[in-house]
Length: 182
Image (cartoon, rainbow, N blue to C red; front, side, top):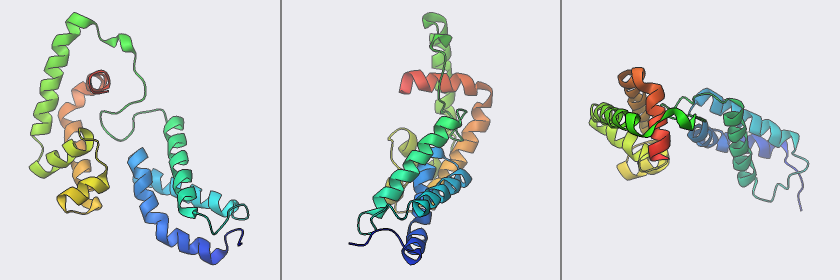
């Protein structure tokens, strides 16, 4: 039984999994540069622990688990708004009072719906599939017969447009989505 990873196997794993792992990490942290850093750290950890890892076992699951854990650590350590618009970590639940804020909620929902409706058709469709149907980029790409990169581009375009349209309402929108879509 072979114990540990050698340099050749490590380089092969790096070449094979770096890009897919970056896409995987990006699905957590929504930032390509942070995703690349996370994946690099995962490979550094893999190399540093190469003697402890059984090369015949599933190294793929080890590295994906490592990337996932590093992503969760990144999210925990960066408790600020993620680059994904309308997503946040914590909120004061007392921000809404039942009667007075019900009208604001309806008004904001109308503004959100209008902003989403104003998106180009393809970007709107992809945004809705991602955010409201909880589909991963790869699933959307497969359903629509397009590349994952195209999905990412449409999501980025949609988020930028929504950020501009809803900039004045961003905090209230985040609270609204947290309480009523969560």
